[in-house]
Amino acid sequence: MRLQRYLTGVAMAALLAGSAVAQTAPGQPPAAGTLNPAAGQAPPAAPAATPQFQLADGVLATVNDSIITGYDLRQRMLMLIAMTQVQPTPENIPAIQQQAMNALIDERLQNQELARYEDLVVSDEEVDREIADMAREVGTTGENYVAYLTQGGIRPQTFRDQLRTQIGWSQLVGGRFQSRARVSRGAVEAALRQINEAAAKKQYLVGEIYIEASRVGGQQAALNGANQLVAQMVQGAPFQAVAQQFSAAPSATRGGDAGWVVEGTVQPALQTALDQLSPGQLSRPIPVDGGVYIIYMRDKREGASASLVSMKQVMVELPETATEADVAAAGQRLEAIRGQLTCDNILTRARSEQGLLGADLGESDVQNLAPQFQQVARSAEVGSISSPVRTPLGVHLLAVCGRRVGGAEAPDPRAVENQLFRQNLSTLGRRYMRDLREDALIEYKN
Image (cartoon, rainbow, N blue to C red; front, top):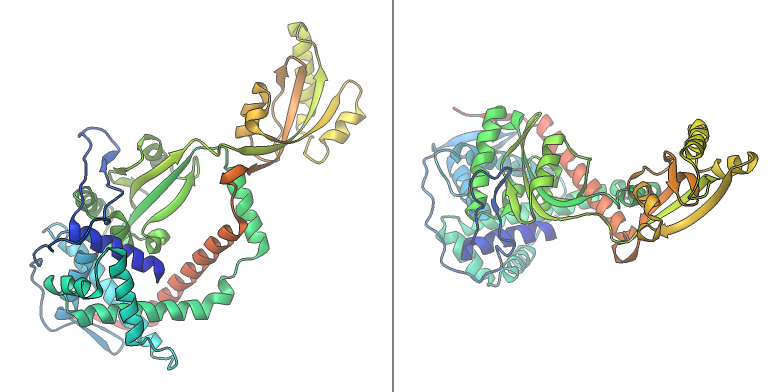
């Protein structure tokens, strides 16, 4: 619930105070505008007018034996608008309505599942504490928080019921899947290796929103919807809250926070956007197979400032005055054995052949290596053997046998384990929800 509370609080703060947004000049793809990172930190102000839109009365859908009425849908749409600050327009009302209906269906299924556990009861005191915490994080009181929603047309009981379900569902998923979500030592070590191997590459701290075409009526509908969301966010709608409500990516539960993305690990269209966006900028919609992405560039870096690499080498000694023919012959000799070398056998092979020298270079900061070695140390894959490298001492083959981040940027194994645990729990929760949907009888009324 802590993340849910934070995102809701950010959205509410932006609603209470508004947020300033500076737009970039047109014709500068892929940026659509610059988001204000301080949005949601201002003190409360007067709320906007209640949105007006028409909905049919009566029963709109049934979820097993539970009904969803026009009134329920309107309340959820008002809540969605309040939490995201996406203002209703003729173009985006269908998307808001669809998202609100999906949320209501999920909530009905969650309540039906929670009813099976008689000992899992969320008290009024727990709901009160949640509201108080949400209000405190945006600099107001629980009473003012609820009063704001009331002025926007949202019944306090609707808000409380939604929170009660969220709290209960979080407790149920955590209790049911905690043991299955635990992370093995091997998984943590693999994640640490991946982080360390990416240490020298460009990295981008991004937020993401993914509009899945199959869920919104096709690729063109996804693109239209993404354009509407971009326009609303450039005008001040908080990115995190919009991502939480509209994104189909797994990161939606974290407000679209995709974390640090490593260069070369995303689709080419997204990589182009990552390279061109500056910190603070929001991208225009980026079509990909199956949907459309919106990227928010929070920060970027060239790579860890303290990248440590473990290397071994085999070399042919040659003075700096050696002829080009001697250098070429040494390179050809090394190239001939390169495909047979590994980190495990490179030193043994060097000792077994006359005229070759082997050495374990140990672990070094990349910045402290010879300039000719730095490019290999930064970019070569762990376990690979380089092409021949010429230095004043000779011609070398370099084996990159390990890489890790050093200094203050070194990854914390416990933090990595906790992150993987949260990801596993989120995945299990989504599967749980998917199974409930597949087993449910959901009927829409005309």
